[in-house]
Length: 165
Image (cartoon, rainbow, N blue to C red; front, side):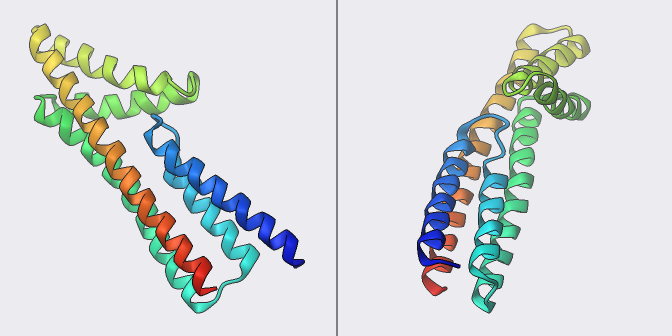
């Protein structure tokens, strides 16, 4: 591949990685997925050396971990706030459906509304329903920080991959 083209594509990949990293703070934006796809594209452009395969393997594991951590922190926050497991699962489903039907913020609205309404329906206590909702919100915040931290590690690994060639 021509050197100028390879350089241009590498710069483009870096820009997309930054978009994915910043996107980690945007609700329901698949920042880690964008970063993983960028790393995959980099591998196809620059080739798959042994260090590259190892680094990409670690990036893949981090991508999977970011998805699990995201859901775990949100669910744990809601649970700590007193939400029932059913409310947590319905909130996750509502988030997915809301995002698909009303992107990009439908899920951000649907999840908390689902938790509040289900908990209010279950407990007939607005204060306890609000407490469950507050726990979900705290979980959201922690999950964004975790996704950003994982994104920073992915970015550092990509730079290592770029340097190791």
